[in-house]
Every structure is written in C-alpha cells, then in structure tokens.
Image (tube, rainbow, N blue to C red; front, side, top):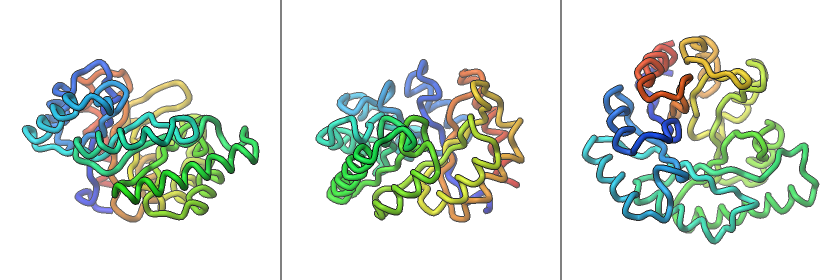
Length: 251
C-alpha cells in the first residue's frame, strides 16, 4: 500500500496529562491529520462545552476527529447511554465510535454470557443504524476480542457493516500470532492502534519497523493508523515516533 493511502493520527489518551490544545498543537507540528479523542479525560461525552471547544480547535488547526475513543462497555454499560456518546462523537465531527465488548474473554465466558453479549451487540447495531454511526470493538484483553476465534465469530454472527473492529498487536502474543489475527480480522477492521510493546515493556516504534511492515501487509485496503502511547509517556517523544511511522509506511 502506498504511503498516501493511509490516514495518520494520534489517540489522545496517549497524553492524559496534556490539554486538548497541547495535543492538537503537537499533532499539527508533526504532520498528523487526525485525533481519536478519549471520553475518559479529554472529551467526556456529557461535557458539551468541552466538546465544542475541541471542535473549534480542530477547525483552527485544520485537523479532524478520526474517531471517538469511548470507554463504553457492551454487556456492562446500559445501552441507553449510547446516545450521549453518539451526540459527543458528532460534535467532534466523527461517526466512528470505539468501544469495548464484554467484561471477560471468550474462554472465561459461559454460553449464556456469550449469548447475552451477542444479543446486546445486535441491539447496538440497531442504534448505530438509527443514528448513522459505526461501532468498532477494540482488540483488548478481558473482552470478547482478546482471542481471534471469538472476535471472528462475533463479526460473522453480527454481520453488519455498522459493527466493525479495531486491530492492534497483543503485547502478550508473539509476532506470528499477531500476524494471524491481523490477516483474519482485516476485512472487518476500520482503524489500527500503533505501538510497540512486549509484555509490560514499551519500546519505540523504531525497534519494530519490519514487524509493523509485516502487520500492515495484511491490510490490503486503506486504514487509519493511530499512534497510541509513547515509549516514555512524553509528548516530546511524538516526533520520534512519527518519524518511525513514516519509515514503516514507506516500506
């Protein structure tokens, strides 16, 4: 895939200690084009004044919101609260909402728990259709997406373009396992979180150039690549990670 086929952005939770304006300025300075705003710190779904402020800052700096990183958890958070998150996403200028699916992985679920979660996901699709939005479940531990087989089963069972996936490598799995997951889930994937972790250790993307080129080769159509977290947690490190991301997508 050619370099210009990617949209490049940042996940705001990478810098929870920085203000939205500081994040926007840093993103603009390194040449990223979009931001996934997190609902936990920077863009709470019911803080309409803050959401409008962020939207105005995006216009000022010629950036856009790629997606809304919610901490809504299907199977736990009441579905009635989804409309608050949808309203917030639209103020920010996106119709893509990232959420978590379930409170445990598939291996630790009973059949009844799985059935109820699947039913909840199907109900969320009806809401997505009504409000013209897309829900994307994150590849995250302690959710149904922790293991490939479970994530694929849910994608096939739900069978809706309104219910998609994010992908990111699991730091507890080896490269081969992550490659397999990436390839299988690629048709359902909307955005990709980009970072270089091994277990509990965080590394610079510069140490994973070839690994990430391998991952991205599994996605044959354009994706949004979102830098998530810095190896040292510092916003000053963003330029270094951006340079590494450019090396990755140049192939």
